[in-house]
Image (cartoon, rainbow over all chains, first blue to last red; front, side, top):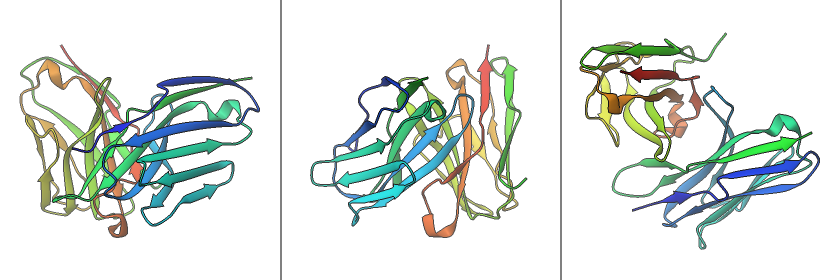
Length: 113
Length: 114
């Protein structure tokens, strides 16, 4: 059974710092991995989607990497800003007898001005 | 504005009552989803729909009913609400190319059952 974990559960950093969020999954048989952002009281916003054949995706100050063999993905945020404060979730689309997306529990990020 | 609209945003009801959560999308996306988000469980899929009149169970469907008579609407009904159904409910949609993979989320309905 595929399990998705995210460590740490919460992170607080000063403004301007570069940071890395981690996502781990137990089964490497995945179609893709996606990173989402969730602001308080809001739904999820898709940030980056990495196909299983890709190693990384970039969008602005965000860079997501994928290592299927080790079951890991990282989301790198450069030059963090207070507006980056949110919960970041990763989600994997699994390759099983039925198509399914499994979400991690999220990392709550606070960027302190 | 285009997007996904959920209503109501907040709802308080009593056990045993029927309650319907509404979801409307303006993109004409084929796929729509209902999730619940709980501390300790994360996001869990309740039901999804691949097109009008086509629905299927997700991970936690018990106690819920859905319908999709029109592409743009996907209501979720709790037939007899229980306290364990207190949660935040999210509706989501995606285009065909993403199929069974939610891309766009509404802002959620916070449901409390007393």
